[in-house]
Length: 297
Image (cartoon, rainbow, N blue to C red; front, side, top):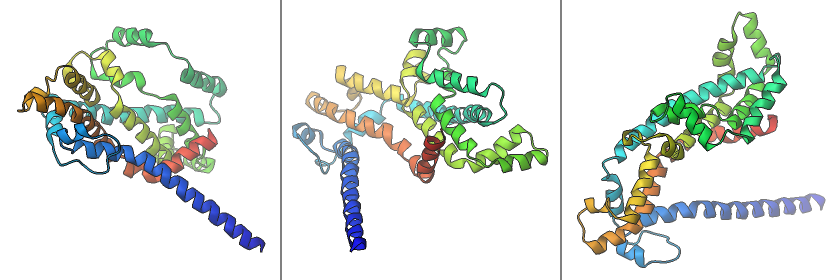
């Protein structure tokens, strides 16, 4: 009887979880589908529609034509790929070096260093001091201005430190007996063993670089260095203000006013879809890497 009650309770609990997770999944997924359907809809039909959208209203690629015909869009893509690739590699390298040092049990002044590291998570120099620092050290209006100031994110380093600390001490001791130095231990033993944590940190940094635009507003004047997100922001503002970009596509004034509605949806798709392809490669490490950091941090 007790077992039966337990089974019914477990079944009810599982059912509740399934229903709850299904609802949460729909709530998370539908806005993306709404934007995708709207981006392929006919401008005239979309402008008259209100409420939820469950399929494209007709079919049109005018919005994508407007966004992708912007002459700077491909330069922005290349710049963003540079910032994501080079920035993420340097981020992970510097974060791993810092996390490895803080995870060593024999590190001198380990506690004060850990406190100083955490302190930077809550207190910063402020916008103007950061801008003056970047300008005075010669990084202003260079690609490095979007990479160097954010080389290490403290939270990511704490997560990585927890991952490194979970590696059995016996591996390190065996390597030292065989004559390995700290760099050999880090790059040939610690990092491969803690690859789940490293994969999560790579994802965090890559997504951060892909979505970054504010630092570009502050530190860049040369439009040839603009990342994709900043250019897409300009496209949105230009079309909402004067419609200069839309004028590059042959259409009358009424059609232009209707296309404005499409621009925002197409811009979101253009900016979001590429980074979504990274997630499946890191998904199998994501839960393990994040949970490890939360439990050991």
